Length: 166
Image (cartoon, rainbow, N blue to C red; front, top):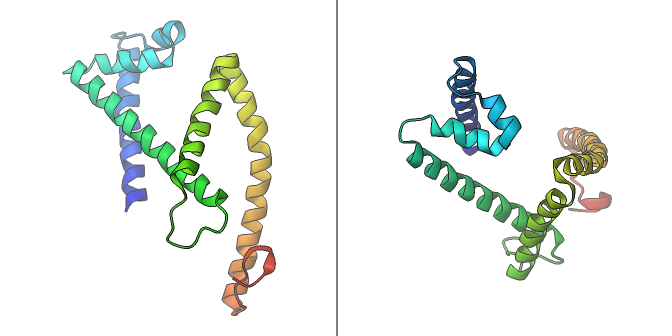
């Protein structure tokens, strides 16, 4: 339910505000592309929201939702990374708070450092270089998944990491 409704909510948001921004551009009410070119994409988003009724309230709500989204995303990512990197973590146990905090700080510092070092071009290059090996890992994981599903269907015992017992 959460995946379906979250995806539908995101799609609805982009359909409504994307088309509203396009309408503003085509009707010459607000030259969104010019605002984005001169002041940046963030300023263009605020300029689009500023065209709505109760603009101050809409911008405040947008800012609050953005902060909540970012906080929950970083919290979830740091929890998953800490869980994966903690040795001998028993099922049902949480990773230590210091470990989660370490990953949260790391996840915050890396993108900020890349943006301040060289802007978006450097960040795009780094993301491309890092994503290529991850793409290969994804292919290997997909092949392993298909093999494991075939073994499960055939009634073979499930294996854990490195082919050992689960």
